[in-house]
Length: 412
Image 1 (tube, rainbow, N blue to C red):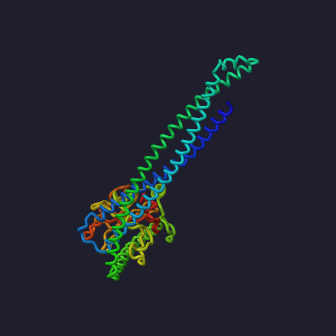
Image 2 (cartoon, rainbow, N blue to C red):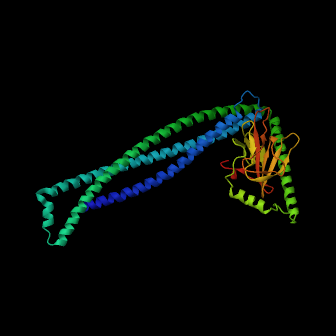
Image 3 (cartoon, rainbow, N blue to C red):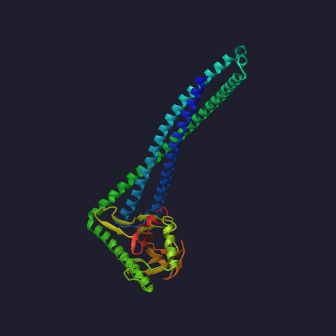
C-alpha cells in the first residue's frame, strides 16, 4: 500500500510541475505569436494601402525618381513582412517540438499510471479472498487499532478512485495536445506557403527596382538635383514654421510681461490644461487623416535609393486617398496659416506648449484663432495632378523643437 501511495503522490507532483512548466511556456509563446500575428496583419494592410495609394494608377506617368521611391517603400514593408512571417513559422516549429516532447512524456506517464493502477487492482482483488477485509478489521486488538485499519482501507479505496481519475485526465491532456499539434502544423504550412509567395513578389519588386536604378544612374546628376530641389523646398517650409513658432512664443511672453528670451509659451490656465492633456494622451492621438500610410519617416535619413543623399524631415509624410481631409489630432487653436510661392498652404495648431502642423493642403477650412477639436476637418489634402499622389506632411513641435510624431499618434 505504501508503494502505491508514494507512486501516486510522485505522479501528482510530477504532473503539476509539468503542467505549470508547459502552461507558462505555452502562455508566453501564445502571447508572442499573437503579437507577431497582429504585426503581420498590419504589414499586410500597409502593403495593401501602398498598392492602393501609390500603385493603383499604373497608366499615370511618374518620374523615374518617384517610381523608385514608391517601390523602395513597398520593398521595405514586404521585407519586414517576410521577417515577421519567418519568425512566426520558427516559433511554431519550437511549439511543435515542445508539444511533441510533451506528448511523449505524457504517454510515458500514462503507461506508468496504467501499470500502477493494474497492480493496485490486482492486489485489491487478492485481498478480498476469504473475507480478508473483515478479518483484517476483526483481528484488531482494540477499538483504536480497528479504527485505524478502517481508515487505512478507506484511504486505499480513495487512492484507487483518484488513480482512475488521473488516468482519465492524462488521456484527455494527451488528446488535446494531439489536436493542438495538428493545428500548429496546419498553421505553419499556411505561413510557409504565404511566405514563399511574398518572397517571390519581393524578388520581382527588387528586379523592377534594379532596372529603374540603372536607368537613374544614366542621368545621375539630374536625379541628385531633383532630390536637392525637393529638400530645399522642404527646408524653406520647416524654417518658416519654426520662425513663426518662435515669434508666437515671444509674443505670448511679452503679453504676459515675462522675459522675451523664454523658449516656451506663457500659457493661460486653459492653455496649460490643454498642454497637460496632450502629454497625458501621448501615443493615443488619432491620425491626422482617416486613412493613410507613412511614406517618409521623421528625422535625418539617407535617401531610400541614393544613400549618399541625406534627407532631413521635421515630421512624417503620409500618403492618403484622393479628396482626403486633414484632421486636428487634439483640442487646440489655429495659430497660423502659411503659404509659399510654388507650394501649398500649411496650418499650424497650438495645443498649449505643443504645435501640430499640417502641410500640403489643397483647401483650408479653418481661420486663424479658431478653436478646433480632435478629428475636426481643417482642410483637404492636395493631390498632385502629375503623379496622382495625395500626401500630407504632418509634424509635432514641443515649443519650436520638432519631435517624432510616431511617439504621439496611435500605432503610427
